[in-house]
Structure formats: C-alpha cells, structure tokens
Length: 276
Image (cartoon, rainbow, N blue to C red):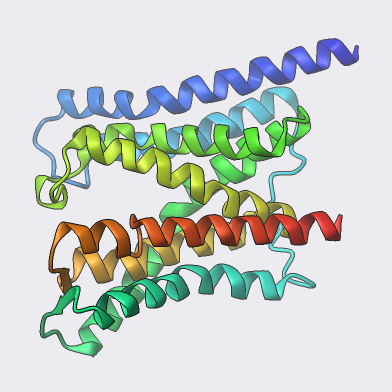
C-alpha cells in the first residue's frame, strides 16, 4: 500500500508539472484564436495564470488530499516572518541601488513622489491578487508534494525554482512586450529568469516551511513585483548608466542582489533547521 501511495504521489506530481509547462502554450493557442486583444492583458494570459492552480485543485480533489496547502494565514506566532517577507526585497533594493548611486551608476529622472507611491500601492494590490494564483501553485501544491516524497532540500529548491521559471518561458518568449526587453534577447531573459527563480525559490520555500502558510509568500512576491520592478522598469524613475552597473547592481537581476537573496535563503534555512 505504501509503495502504491508513493507511485500515485509521483504520477500526480508529474501530471501537475506537465500541465504547468503546457499552460502558457495553451494560452498562446487561445490568443491565436482571438487575435484582437489588448497586449499584456489577453485571455490567453489569464489561461496561463489560472491553469496551474486549477490543476492543483483538481488533482487534490481527485486524490481527496487537502492537507499542507498553506491556506491558513497562521499569523499568530509568525508575525515576524510576515515582516521579513515584506522587508526582503525593499532592503536588498536599497542596498544595491545605494551602492549604484554611491558610485555614480544610476541617473534619476524627475517624478512626483506621490505619483510613485500611488503606482507602488496600486501595483502591490494588483500583484497580491495575481500572486495568489502563482504562490498557491508553487508553494501551496508543488513544494508540499515534494516534501511529502521526502525530496532532498536542494532538489526541492531546484525543482520548484525551475518549474516556476519554465512556467514563465511563454511570458518571456511571447507575452512580454518589446519595450521591456532591454538589452537582452527573449531567450537571454529566459535564461536569466531560470537562474533567478532557482535562487529565489530557497527564500520562498523556507518562508512556507517556517510558517506553514502560503500567504507570506504571496506578500513577498507582491512586494517584488511592486517595489523594485516599478522602480527600475515601470516608472522610469531611474536608469543605469551602463550595462556593467545593471549587471552587478540591478536590485532584481544583478549579481549582488542574487548573492544576497541566496544568503537570505540560507539564513532562513538554518533558522528553520534549528526550529525543527
């Protein structure tokens, strides 16, 4: 019975991963059938966003398995981890951009601070809702199912990070508007995304394991989409003077930021091991 249960778990996990990796291309097919749609807000993109969580819910319903989804906020006793989740991306953004400013690596453009704050707040709200779909797929389903199979921690980070990144492949290759490509090709952005999301996965997995809740991960992901992304990409508030500064000190994709994210993940892992 135990062996049959393990086989069933592995099959369910593989079905989920296959659906995740195909979901975006299903969205591309939907958009090809309905060509007159707004860029960046198409029905195909909605299919891409919703299908992984829908697949997770259907698989759990079929297996009658609702444990470890992390639906409860579990704020009591975990408030500090919500604060940490909120603070990680702003802190690393301040460190990296502070160094870039110190060395004359960024140029600031004039923008109303009130307009910037409004843009960030609106972005946090919208991305919080969007990231419910993402985080309950990756941390609410994929991560606990890997834990259930007793997968080694490092493989959990690698598998969950790669599935998360490769789900984004269709976004980078098809959905992403041209003006956001910058100096990289679409394939280049995908490769960078794979590295980043494997590195970020450690933080998200460990926050989930510390709190047994997906909500702090949703919060952290919303802050990432809203604060550094708006600051560097959307608002036009600052630009890097050259590619070298961007490569080393970009608060999202830069080498220093990536090293710091890994450091945060390792610290969270060590705290969780001590707690366990």
